[in-house]
Amino acid sequence: MSLFKSGSKSCIGIDIGTSSIKMVQLKKSEGRFKLETYGELQTYGYLERLNDPFHTKSLRMLETQVIELTKKLLKAAGATAKDLALSVPIFSSFVSTIEIPPMSEEELSKALIYEARRHVPIPLSEVRVDWRVIEKQKIDSVKPNTKKNLFKYRVLLVAVPKEIIAKYLRIAKGLKLNLRALELESFSYIRSLMGNDLSSACILDIGARSTSFTIVDKGFLQMSHSLDIAGAELTRALAHGLGVDFKRAELYKRQKGLDHKELIESNQEIKDIILTLVDKIVIEIERIIDSYQTKTGRKITKLVLSGGSGGLLGLRSYLEKKLNTKVIKGNPWARVVYPPVLEPILLELAPRFAVAVGLAMREI
Image 1 (cartoon, rainbow, N blue to C red):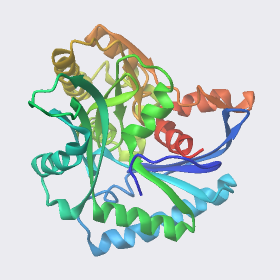
Image 2: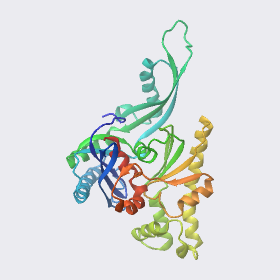
Image 3: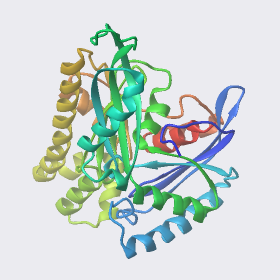
């Protein structure tokens, strides 16, 4: 399977996260994506170890549980498609943007094998490597008497451990579905959130286990990075500060977001804990954006929120104030046809479904 491959009629996209499993089934109708069904199964960290990079017996057992839970979700949603696309979390992969010096197209593949050895921290025999040229600039030949055209390249290099790939193959087999694609989740939400938008943006995906920062420009992923501070840590901080269990704290977080007035006006410590964590994410956003703008001279025009905690109340306005930039709530349903009656709930769920929608879009 190519990590960059595409093409089918009706497809199920499944995003197996650490706090929930999301699925979307789409088909093409008159040149547009049409929603056939969707569903989400909350797991509250039950699957937290699924994407650990090291194989263990307990992980094998967890795969069986994932298969059974996903089967129930597909049945409850009435899914009918047989083609499937799955995503790989950023924290389970290695992603680098590499500058390649002037060379011919024929020399590029060999050069990339060498670069992969430099940038991937584990033996290449243990990973599946793929790459995509994101910028190609022709230059005057620097080699005398050569007829070859020479180019400077910017290449996106992706490496996924083979055990991670094998795990998802086993899950697809257990679901009795045809795995058409396995791709990095960044590509999925770029597809669903950006569409044909070629402007420069930073997609902030706040999941349960990690927060990812993805720079997308001219339709291509340019930089990608992840941070261990995410939704689950915010929930744990709330649980500790309020003296309640994890599920109750998660409910508080979803209902109130950063606006915990009745909960924190009398407890400045809780507010400080939450905003300290959010500010660590802000610092990383600033670092990533500054790095890209300095390197390319192109200005990031907006921040797009995604992920389970990306839709927290008060987060968008807080980030706009801290970063002094346009911040929008990502909407993966923008190019999808669905019954109008579903609009309120779909817009509420939008940040959480960006990966699943993008996966289903890929293969139709």
